[in-house]
Picture 1: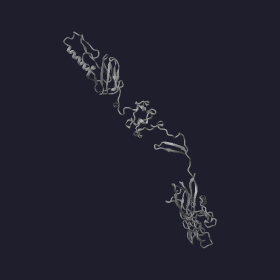
Picture 2: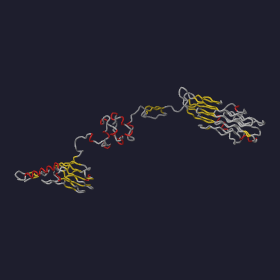
Picture 3: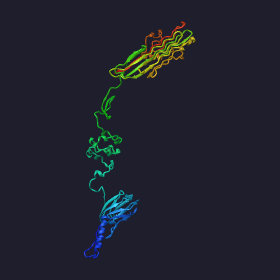
Picture 4: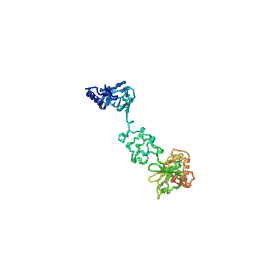
Amino acid sequence: MSSFSSDLKLELMVTGQNAGTWGDKTNTNLQLVQQAIAGVESVTLSDGGTVALVMSNAALSNARNMVIKFATITLSSASNVTIPDSIEKFYIFDATDVTAATNLTIKTASGSGFTLDASKIYAAYSDGTNLKEVSLDTLGGTIAAAQIASDAVTTAKILQSNVTQNKMAPNAVGTAQILQSNVTQNKMAPNAVGTAQILQSNVTLNKMAPNSVGPAQLQSTAVTAGSYNTADITVDEDGRITAASTGSAGSPDFALTFADATAGTATFNAQPGTTKLNIYMTGGGGGGGSGAPTHGCGQGGNAGIGFFNIPVSSPAPSPFSAPYTIGDGGNGGTATGSGQTGQSSTFGSPVQATCTGGGGGQFEPAGPTGSKNTLGGASGTAPGATLDLTVATGNPTSGGTDLAIQAPIDQVRRGACGFVGRNALGDGDNDDHTDKFGTGGDRDKALPSPTASGKKGNAGAIVIFENIVS
């Protein structure tokens, strides 16, 4: 009586039996072997259920096929496919048409198996008890570069301590191999990247993530760490500080080097090395108006006065030079006339500083005797000055006493600037305003005289300080 093999269920015939049927039975066995070696069977899965493949004795059966291809289906819950126990066989399972294949488990009827991780093709074998998956992580052999996609290796797949210089060939790291956001400090072992591993032209800003360069990645220079007061530093073409030392503080002090109060134009020559000028300057005062006992008249107005801070260039060997003009005072009024306006004082070409002259004192033909103090000339100005020190003094409506036109603060400022001359600059009568450069000339005071000329205004002046004192 025939028996059957345990794996493929082939009919094993006994000598002396199955007379006349050996040919048919042998053909059947060959068909069963062919199914086991090359057979492809389509199997429809049961969503949430179990499909049991069978292996019948001496008959074509779905569990005997080499390839089991699952029909198109979407699995919404856990599903199973089982093969019979006690058979030893190799299988290929095709799950490419299965959606949500991760819900499918393939195993032996009583033993274990494996759950699919994607809609792919799987190889497996049964050892008679359990079904074993044959996968890339269980196969032997090596993986060559051609089998790795360009973007397959990410930072999560690399152990930091394994990225060392001896694992990279010279010029192995190019821009195409580096994902910008993945270049961070914690993905590089200490001293992992040497000059031999980096192609110079590939190190660009867009290949470095923000904050990817820390102190450990920077090459030290010869500079000693510390604090430097008023530091003298040397910087190379890469922006690194290569030398540092404590320097000397402050700029050179200013000293008075020049003064002039002669009306006319001349040239100022700076000291060698001067880079800045501090200039005090005033224009010429206005002339006083003429007058008589029955006519009004006024003093000349004071010129503008100002401070100017002027930077200059002083290349060796020739120091800086510039022309300047001292404005003359305006002439006093004669007979029955008003005084003339004083001239402006200027510095530089083109002009860098200007102080305009004071206005002439006015004459009033029919004025009452008491109106002579209200006709003073207008004050000059210092347009564009760093500090305009002008005090309005010659306003014709100011009124007041005989000396009202000469405001005390204006006189103090002129004295502090050094704009002081001899007592006889004006009319020689020892008034406190007549010894200052740039002040206006007196009006007529000779009341008994029928008419008297106003006094000439005082010429302007210039005082210069240079930054030459260390």
